[in-house]
Length: 87
Image (cartoon, rainbow, N blue to C red):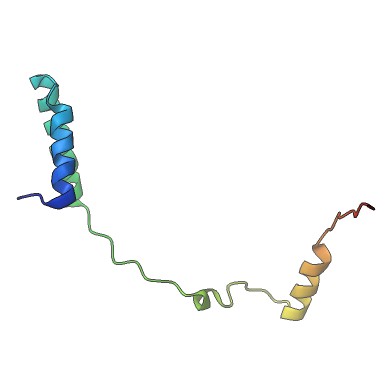
């Protein structure tokens, strides 16, 4: 498998970075990379995520209260502590 473009430069960067490591460390790194690949092959690929619309959230609050009462409750729970200082 050939790497092209940006991936090739990333591969070259890591090869240069790892070139100074000892053989033992390189082998350890290879075994850990292959183990992670084996785990990746065992996993099922996630389904394509659906785009959610704001309309999907319509009716998200379920309550026995009518909408007008809920609005009144929310408005009455507001607390303002605004003090206007004279100039």
